Structures are given as C-alpha cells and as structure tokens.
Image (cartoon, rainbow, N blue to C red; front, top):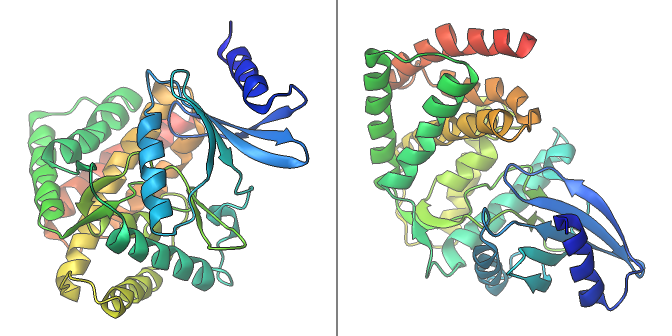
Length: 331
C-alpha cells in the first residue's frame, strides 16, 4: 500500500469518516510533507514525517514546551507515531515571508522578537540536545561537501581545506562562548505565520536545541529568504537587547560583544543553509532553494571589511563559488 493510501486509511479511522478532502500545503526543506485537510467546514494540517527520517517525538515534546509558555505552536489533534502522521491545527497560508514589507515590518518583527524573548527566557530546556562543537561542525561541513564539492564540482586544495578548518574553529568558538538558551534553530520568515491572536504562529521547531543566544535572532534578522538594510538590522538588534533588559534577563550583555557574536553566528548559519540548499537540489530534487544561495552568501560578504578573519573565505566566495554558481544555474 502506498504511503498516501496509508495516510488516507489513518485519517478515515481517526475522523470516523472518509468524507474529507486533502490538498498539498507546502514544500519543506526536509523529508516531511504537509497537506491541508478539509473536513466538516474546518481545515487542519497533516504532517507526514516518515519515521526513518524524521522524529515526531521531538516535535511533540517541543510543542508541549512552547504551549507551556503560551507561545502559539500548533495544537496536536491526533498522532500515529508508528507511521509518522500528525494531525495539527491550521495557521492558514499567511507566511511572514509573503507579508513583510516596509509598512508591515515593525509590527511583524516586534511580535516575532517578543515571542523569541519568551521562548528563550521561559521555555523548559530539559531534555534538549546541546548545540555543541560536533553539531556546529557537522552543519558547516554541509557547505564544503554539498555546495562546493557536489553541487559546484569544485575540488578543494589543501590551502582551501586549511582555511575552512580555521574558519570553522573560529565560528565554533564564537558560538560556544555565548550565553545558552532555548534555540528554535529555524526561526525565520518561512516558519512564522501571521495569526489573528497571539501572533506569530510558530512552526518547524522539532530540531530545537540548547545553545547560543544569538542564533534565532540572526535567523530572523539575517533571513535567507528576505534581506533588510544593515541599519534596519541594527535597529532590530537594539530592540531585542532592550526587550531583554526590560524582562530583567539573567544574561548580562555587552552590546559590542553581542554584535560580534551575532555577526559570526550568522556566518555559521549561512554556511550551513547554503549547504542544505545545495543538498536539497542534488539529493532530493528540490531545486527552488538554490536561488536563495547568493542572498545567503551576501551576508558573509557584507562582513569582509569588519572582520579580517573572514577575508579568505570571502575571496573564495567571490572569486570561485559565486561565478561557478552563476554558471551552473545558467545550464
């Protein structure tokens, strides 16, 4: 029996009826598939998460943590852990990404940052994996393996490998010296939904960890899918720091130190994201994300005059990676 038929049978049993309709809901940067269920004048979201690839138990655990601090995560109506099916409440189609503009950004980012502060300061971190040296390094190695070698067919020299190892060590050190908090790990405009009450709706948090305080902030402000001017990003960083102070956080933050943490954390995340985008194309046949690689790399290039440690990587990105990427994407 096909997986889709198995899903239909599970829904029929769960709902006590086969009088429903299903439509594709969204494409995801993982093995998960999402459908929208129409049943009795209501809509729901079905998460199809094959258990050999995805961890539904983690999604359920993190959902409970977010609900406990009154954040707007989906309600889980029904679960089949053996098959990897979840029936969830539906936040609709209003992604932050589609609504962000100069007129809406203040309200939407204010809500997002307020939710982030709550998540960082109030979420139960018990049972979360640590964002440790091993995980940080594995993520950055996606860049060299999947983007440089497999997608662009660039053979790295010994000098290139040495340069990337030095860079990775710098970025790992930067991440590990920061205060640790609950980290959503994909807190950005494709995973924040506009909701009438308790905005935003937060999704795709099953990979949450305990790690660097700047990670989620850089995810949303230096977003791989939409880019804002540097001075606007600086204003939102200050908004975040002011809110952190207002909440009397135990974390004592020096702004200049925080900015360095934030910028270099962004480099780690953007290397990881580019590797994932390339892997989605090469391995999974999901080619839509490749167009976001130049924007994502541009955040690293923006820092070349601020952090001398990044100049060798910026030279490789400018002189080798971006030209080969443009050439590959023309084919």
